[in-house]
Image 1 (cartoon, rainbow, N blue to C red):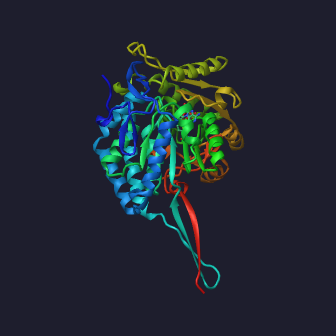
Image 2 (tube, rainbow, N blue to C red):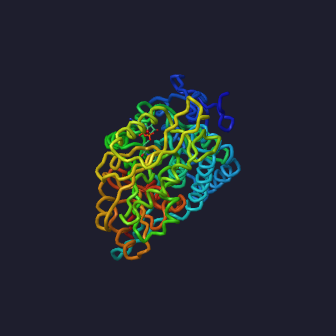
Length: 484
Ligand code: NAD
């Protein structure tokens, strides 16, 4: 049975408010990672479709969308948020089948999409310029204006959340968007286009062109008609996108990977910390940019933490997305092979615990064994490279200085958390840790649509989420009037 997100033919592109066949007429198979079976065919968009989409976005900016007021844009986003809330189960089902994530996690992503739309609906008319005291005889003020056409290249791991935070903010500021979802998972991107249309978004303000990264993605990042690019994905492709954008001298937001640590001191409230130590690493089978894949533990409680984390690993239930267990499959067999090759590289280490894969798993599914490594040195490849799978390492440390050195000793800097009762230590580490977000005695703060998010180093640059995203998706103009 072929999937039809919101009644839409999944093999089409959404351009200029129409569902159209891509220029070549070619399609790609979309696979269900829980079973290995095909879900449906999706469009294999190319540079011709991207060009068409950019032109349609330009036409929207020259028309009603370009003249829309902030309050009107807010209302469209709010209506879209309501439609998402009315269709949480439908969206969760699509995301679960497409990405392989357990239904409860997929539903949480749909709720987050609604929250992004609500947040940016409310924020749209609250972003404004300022007046600047200046020379006698002048009045100076600033205007925050849309960039124009924004390109959004999205990965497969959290399509709904990433579309919400990136496209939601861009539309709130009055940009017209061209979205290139991932070839591995794009059903909710198509559903999103239909929802925005039903919410009253004018034709061309949002265009969706599915296709391969090297074709549609590369064409979008190199298109001279695009004025801002938001890319979420791997470091390798992020560098390519930044190089392409440099040719057109346009700003880029890069949300790349991470090797995010949690620092657990001997005075930590372990009962509170334990669920976060494991879940923050294994959510979405570890395929999360902000996954906490390194657990740094102070020596006196090291054995206890490893033992308690191991108990949790052994209790994990792995299964198909719709069976809604703790952990689903990885996105593809390719990703599974990558993760398994990393586990092989850890054969010199102590495997503290591994979850059991149940015998009833569909044979074609891309299931990996959640694995916890203990006694890992900070420079081991498993402690340095992003694995993007259900694998965590536990690293011992002696004191605060050593914990800080280990935490900062990767090329990434996305998220960090510190578990300690000492307020002064919390403040010291929050300042010195190399990360875009630091959580004290928690991890992730429940998702935090309102909280600016982004990285340092190889984790990328620019900030999405919260009000900060609205500054990124707009350009500041200074107006100086000389009136005597
Ligand atoms: P990827 O970089 O291969 O693909 C991401 C997107 O880029 C997809 O839409 C893909 O089609 C497109 N793409 C691929 N090649 C392209 C090219 N040459 N030009 C333009 N676009 C191209 O990444 P992935 O395998 O889909 O996702 C996994 C990686 O993404 C991990 O490294 C992870 O850390 C990172 N990620 C980061 C965040 C974040 O917010 N920081 C979120 C999710 C994933």
